[in-house]
Amino acid sequence: VTSGTPAAVVIMDAYYPGMNGSNYGGLALPVQPRVRVTDVGGSVPSSLTSLVVAEISGPPSDRENGSKPMIFGTRTAVPDPVTGEASFTDLSLNLKGSYTLSFTYAHLSAESRPFTILTGSIAVLAFLSQPSPSLFAAPLPI
Image (cartoon, rainbow, N blue to C red):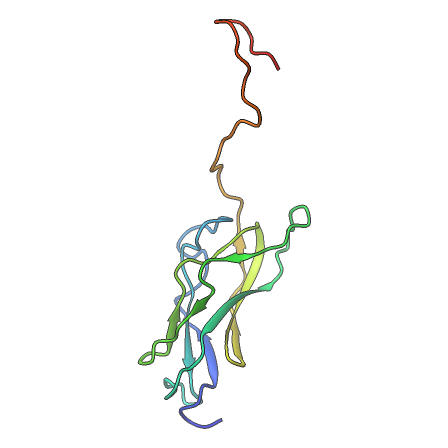
């Protein structure tokens, strides 16, 4: 690997999911990942031609009913040609559990620290069946 050629993907040290709040399933991570692509000397490569891709790399420790954990949001980010940084803005995960994320640029990758996704609060209340018409002060039929 020569100077000016991408040689590493580094997760910015300011990033740690949940450090500024709790992570809830279905909601965007409160602290979004930022990664930096560097050459062998730690500088910005002279040419950045690929996208950085975010993926789940560590399975959750608690699987709900055999459901598959999924990552939502824009899973790709373009590295800035001046700083080499790629920022994600709306990543979320759907199931509670412990996770790690991997960030890949071409053949290079980095893995986040483990973090936990919690069960979120109730977001929707819906009738499974509408109540039948009834008289005033009479119990509703089941």
